[in-house]
Image (cartoon, rainbow, N blue to C red):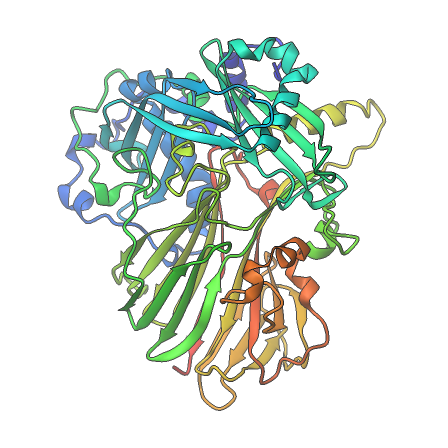
Length: 632
């Protein structure tokens, strides 16, 4: 066991108590869902407040408060839900869990939890040189829906679905099966589980050879990772393996670890730290209407998918969208009948683990100091958002009414669950997942000509393993030694935009450094600072697109080139060599002229997880950008 001699229940209490303000408050203050000081019970919330609550737009919040909602309130809302004794009894029996959270208006928030009580696997073993198939069943899976009043930490709506068994098939290639057999023979697995043929287990792969995983000193395309879910005495444990696939004929397993959980602070452990209320509110409050539930859960525990028409007009915008084979959902848009961008999508999310200290470097220099495809840390996933592995899919369109000084608008909500089974991600939504890897990739359009891309990631992925490594390495220095704390986890979400500000013939490019405007002649890569602006305008008209920059944004501007990965229907989208050679958009920068040319703008949205004020296990980490139009 990774945590020594203490039990899972004891470990859950210790980690939750060490997990920051939210966990401490949960342990000290919870014990009922009503605040006796205001005299208003959960059942007495005015109906109009519930009925008119809708999903909240980013611009409803000032001063970064939208990000704070997801960083702090998600965990607090889940803790509130877990105070209900009916919810506690249910979650306490789960073998795994998946949670979703969204901010609503009217000081409300919506939460869903789902999980099964057991795991059943009917597998084919290790047939020599043949494909393997595993029939996996999450038994008695249920979903809890709740709406929480965030001013009072009070449950105002609650619903629990009936249990159901959900099954799916995991198919493994002969190559993967051979590696799986070697993982079973590893000393760590033998010590933990003995004869695996007597246990129920199944594998999940995030690539082997041919993937875009960077591992240790291996270039991407040569590293691979695998997870095996193992049922052990009624609980779920994780075998995490790293693979050197640089020689496809002789792959080598270079590390195997046993983890007692795939994620930090799962509800199945958090529930152990929370004192239940005296009575459940399940029969005292209304259920949760479908339109107020998170899109990442539906009645059957899958996604709720309500995709809009592939082209539509709303709030002065005309939008077209389509699925792209390896780059998510591609969106094109015009505003007031004039083009804004021909194509925009999110080609890559970088998830890096155990990096050296950043020391002021930009992400290209920090991630790839040798200017090639070898990552500077221990593990990097180049998630290319392929529809073959867990998405992405366009889940739906959320409409925002005009409120106060925020105009009306809408959000296109897309997602990516890396290595999940199918676009419905039924394994993830049963709590049996390859780390969380739940990326929300959304786009908000407003009637005043503002456009906001949003990246949200849920959960810490392989943080469990690398947190252990931090602790182990720190112990080796002893008294009087020095220790440089590594960056355990770091994200970069990329947005690639083929900008067309009122014209499809080429743009004028300007930069504002806080003091003066300049017009760069050639392609460039720039770290953002507060006060900077990148401007793209119509040389023969008034239309302009401004992108304000900050220190958590970087920008790459390159001439449109069909030999490079980009947001449109470039041939490079379908060329594996182009994908394998791409390690950072800055590598495309050379001396090509950009003034009067069609350009692709790469916006790099940086997620410094190690700087988050609360533990990342149950929280959402959010980063956004903003494009503003004028002259339309």
